[in-house]
Length: 199
Length: 199
DNA sequence: TGTTTTACCTACTGCCCAGTAAGTAGGCTG
DNA sequence: CAGCCTACTTACTGGGCAGTAGGTAAAACA
Image (cartoon, rainbow over all chains, first blue to last red; front, side, top):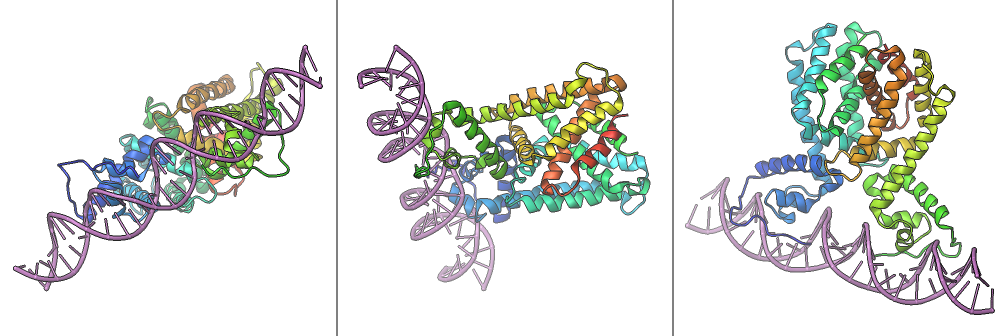
């Protein structure tokens, strides 16, 4: 292996937790820039100022790293969701309150297109029948589906199908927005679309 | 390279065109089964009963092969679309006629999930900023967008945004359908959703 | 202060990758 | 039947890949 010299003099020694966090942060950027198949252990290691072996000291395999990556992204997402739901926890929401929450989620995503891209790309990659992350996404979508359904149930007869439509629309619009290099107002497009779905 | 022996006695010699078609057919299956990164020249060659070198006699590089693959898929899709549009060419469509056409497109896709998966996976992969297929998908989505907009213009004030919503919903629902292993009635879900969007 | 733990390195392995060079053999055309 | 075109082969190359073995030195702890 072409173990390039680690970034020379300014080599840093971090604690395990710090280093792992730094690696995951870089990994998120790398996947979003280069795609899933563009994530190589050596490249990621170099970006972190490490060697391959140094990186693999913290994650025992590439697959383990990717699963940790997904968890990390998920954790951030969940945090944001909880914030968006915020004070309204457990209440019966009105149509416009639900719409506001859904829009807040999308609005947050607008601020971090690299995370949205990461998500979109790995989610698609995981469509491969025996993909190791397939189950992960299946479960995740079930959770989000349940959340959306709860959100709209108070004022919608068909909460299940509406939730599915909202998810499909959100993912679909986000993908188009990424394809057009964030060149249109995603929040506006989403709000307009979501209103049609929330009848 | 581990050039495995080509399939022994039943080795077939085809004409260039036949062989190229056979290779593309196999490639479509392979990508849809293994993902984009699962497409290796050697594996594809073996599935076609060829060696790596034999395959590369027909496509000068892997990238050229993939672009040919996209064109092939596109060609099939367009053929289907023309069929769906069929007799209605150039007419002003009613809302229910437009819905019928949109549903026909989805209904056709239900019959070939491997093509849908191929499409979804490569489209996501092409979100990478400098991906060689990025421009391809950008143009393609513009074309489909224009087509959908024309379809709904006669009875919709906001044809542009509605077309975008339809595309997003179609892709989003198809992705969920694939993730759930074709485990729900995609056409029904689509029809219900499209009706909400066509106001 | 001596011992242990751990972050990280150098140096390496074996594998698979896309692609090439040079030759063989089957089918078509003169 | 002669010669050519082309489909396809064997055999190879250089490079990148994930992962490993074994060592070094800094921090943490006794």
